[in-house]
Structures are given as C-alpha cells and as structure tokens.
Length: 238
Ligand SMILES: NC(=O)C1=CN([C@@H]2O[C@H](COP(=O)(O)OP(=O)(O)OC[C@H]3O[C@@H](n4cnc5c(N)ncnc54)[C@H](OP(=O)(O)O)[C@@H]3O)[C@@H](O)[C@H]2O)C=CC1
Ligand SMILES: O=C(O)C1=N[C@H](C(=O)O)C[C@H](O)C1
Image (cartoon, rainbow, N blue to C red; front, top):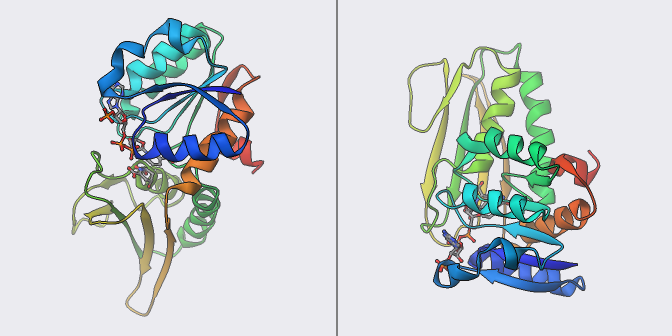
C-alpha cells in the first residue's frame, strides 16, 4: 500500500517503522514545517492516509483526505466535538474513515474487560469508580482520548454515574478522571473500584508506541479497499 502519513511526530515515525516492515511504502510525510505538501493533490498519490497530528489540526486534515477520496485512519485525540461533522462529510462523499482513541490491540482488549467489569458493578453501589491516566508531558490534551472512551463505556453501564469530570470530586454522580503527566510515559490507564471493604483495580500499561502504531497500520490495511465508517473492534473481529 502507498501510505500518506499526516503527522510525522512520535506516532508518525513509529507508524513508518511498522508500515515499512510490513512491505508498505510511505509516499508523503506531513509535519508543520512542510505543510505546503499537505494538499489534496499530494494526498491523492496515496492508497490510504494515516493521520496523527493533534487536537487543533485533526479535523481539517481528515476533511482534506476525504476531499482527496483517500481512505483515512485517524488517531488524533482532543477534537471529537467535530466527529459527527466528519462522519457526515464521509457519508456525503461516499468515503472511508476509521477513528480510534487507541489503536493498540491490548487497549482494545482492555475496553472489553472494562465494559464487562462495569456491567458487573452496575448493581453494586458500594463500589465507587475512578479512572487514572498517566502520559508524557508533551501530551496536549487532557483527559486522554482513551480515558474518555473508558469513561463513556462505564457511564453506559453504571447509571449512578451521570457524567465524567477531569478533577477530584466529592459528588458521587460524577466519574472522576485524574490525569498525570510525567516522563517517560507512553500511556497508562487504570480503572479502580473501591468499597469500604476492598479495591479492584485493572490497568493497561503501554511500554512503548509500537502497539498503537501496529494497530494503526492494521486499520489502514483493513480500510484501504472499503467504503464507509469503521471502528477498531471491526478490524480486530470483536
Ligand atoms: N489513537 C491512538 O492510538 C494514539 C493517539 N495519539 C494521538 O496522536 C496525536 C499525535 O501524537 P504524537 O505523534 O505523540 O504527537 P507529536 O507532537 O509527536 O507529533 C504530531 C505531529 O503532527 C504534526 N502537526 C501538528 N500540527 C500540524 C498541522 N497543522 N499540519 C500538519 N502537521 C501537523 C507535527 O509537526 P511538527 O513535527 O513540525 O511539530 C508532528 O509531526 C495526539 O493527538 C495523540 O494524543 C497518540 C498515540 C496513540
Ligand atoms: O498522546 C499520547 O501519547 C497518547 N494518546 C492517546 C490518548 O489520548 O488516549 C492514546 C495513548 O494513550 C497515547
């Protein structure tokens, strides 16, 4: 496959390594300093685009790929208030789009464990639940996209929690997400259920970025010859 890498930072470089090792060719690498190459015409040279830039630029980049008629995989976080607009544009253009807050196989397994544990905890009000996420200090958004996905999965199952908040809270209706920034930390997510009697904790720790990068390449291989809007669970067959 010919791949356009929109975003050539920590993730873009990790994706390049995995993509090349799987026999793919990188035909475009876009970062801020060569934004002049981030054009519909250049993106058209690729079979698929992989977008990992950040909260401010993701929306415009994805729309540009859809304008180019090139299937796009995006992992940028912190822009999801515009997700529905992107999906609408994708449908209008009969394009292909796949978004995941986290592409690693391990985190996608962890999402399934999180949903099961939340379902078991739904009738157990003695347990309060909290999410803790730890990332490197260059991360621009808080809470992490993965933490938001985990929180939404919990809110769907546990009706005593009404919304997530990104601070310490005494309000039992609120699901706390606590964000820590330290180096080095590719990404750790913990869900903790605590009662007066005991505590149950599940944690996913990324040791490096290879898991995210591999998942993004798997997603690109999956979407390259498809039309429509897909999720990582479909790539992994969950
Ligand atoms: N879904 C997932 O599995 C994962 C998602 N992420 C998310 O991916 C995003 C990128 O992360 P990461 O690679 O660590 O970040 P980096 O800051 O290391 O890289 C971002 C890249 O995007 C480029 N960029 C920023 N703005 C623009 C723009 N307007 N136009 C073109 N290029 C731009 C930067 O250019 P320059 O180099 O010139 O600054 C840089 O190359 C984040 O939102 C992060 O949360 C991260 C890991 C996994
Ligand atoms: O910025 C990062 O690094 C990461 N971002 C994603 C997120 O916000 O959840 C995924 C991963 O945790 C690493």
